[in-house]
Length: 200
Ligand SMILES: Nc1ncnc2c1ncn2[C@@H]1O[C@H](COP(=O)(O)OP(=O)(O)O)[C@@H](O)[C@H]1O
Ligand SMILES: [Mg+2]
Image (cartoon, rainbow, N blue to C red; front, side):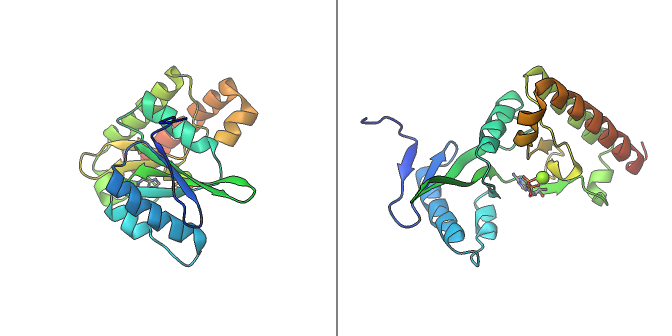
């Protein structure tokens, strides 16, 4: 039992919040735990700006499988999936509840319409990267299942594309083969649309 899992630390205040952190140091973890605890205990508290200041994005979801998929995607394409930093689980009466997970914050914009001016000058790089990232996922036996415009972030500093927000429930019901086919079709359509918008 001793040192069974040094990454798991339990906070005793209400709500009991367990952060299984992968990429946070101790002071960051403590600060984040307080902010997240406040956020999940009151819907009027919003700490997203402060978290952003620490370079952290808090994805709110009750889907526990999504974090695991983000880890797999990050392992397959570490340069193109934001680093997963921890899962947020509250151990309250009735058992554990997943509130979301933490990702390294990517300063940039998604490829939602209308495209940001700075993205449109990048041209082919963005579409090429999207294609390569999905090919990498598929080669690793992973399907994303929701390759929409809001799930591709372009980092401002180096124009690198990051993919987020896999639809794990779809993967479960569709199976891997169908899911990969879906990814390929939708990515194809996305590339076509983006290419037109970028007038390539
Ligand atoms: N790591 C991140 N860094 C910066 N912004 C992010 C990050 N992850 C998500 N976002 C922003 O939050 C939005 C919603 O996140 P997403 O995971 O796609 O959730 P949803 O299920 O609501 O679509 C994204 O479109 C993007 O603008
Ligand atoms: Mg999304």
